[in-house]
Image 1: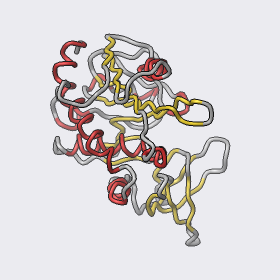
Image 2: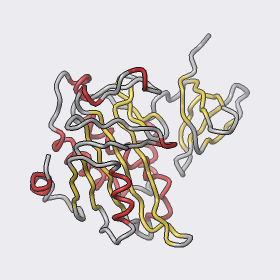
Image 3: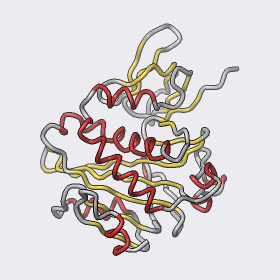
Length: 259
């Protein structure tokens, strides 16, 4: 990829500006700094390699050169969208689900921010905020997608089994084609952020729906229960063994195997 190629291939999309890096520490760091300096809505940072990529809880995100998609998209929410900022992770997740389905795959969303293929992680999302006083000024959507096999880290540094689009498809799709589809889907889904149909689509795409899971919460007691859906803010709804319903806002979902 290069900046001229990206501008040409993405020219028909209503984006802000595009900044391309052959190699960068973190696309999210670049986007956060840019956002704080008046970047336009839908401005894009993309890199062929990240040397300090990260996911939730500062976990390392592995992005070797020319094998993956590493992007950060700046959103400046409208007044209407400000009521649904907690759904932005769902916006990114559903856009990826639609992109991968168009390739003939069957992706699922591992709440809150991972995309699975055949039970293995193929993509992740990191949402970060830029504040102006007590108000959110804008959001940065960080997305990493394992496109080629070389994007998958060795098993000794994985916290969860991983895969790539190449593993799933038998070939490595063109990264710019995937990028164009993903951005197109974000643009198409964004006007529906506050709708019931958006939440229904998010729920239908959940991994482990109806199954017993354990949610690991940092610094708190883990909870277990059966996934029964999502609250309107994107929190995960569970039903425990006593029939009690609970909502979880943060945590890592693990399938609870029967013994």
